[in-house]
Image 1 (cartoon, rainbow, N blue to C red):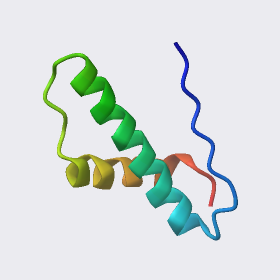
Image 2: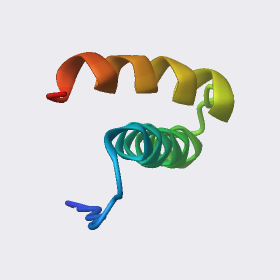
Image 3: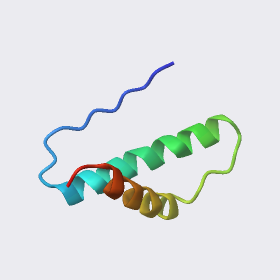
Image 4: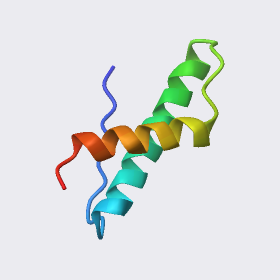
Length: 59
């Protein structure tokens, strides 16, 4: 199965980072729940992922 999330027209990089990390975290929680695992708390994971996206995405 493949799920693709597409979000367009984000006004600036800071919002891009937050939205990317947020969707990533929502999907991680979905996978954890579907596999009967305890998910990472949303804001903890989102903060960590936002830092990762900041390093990976071009400025």
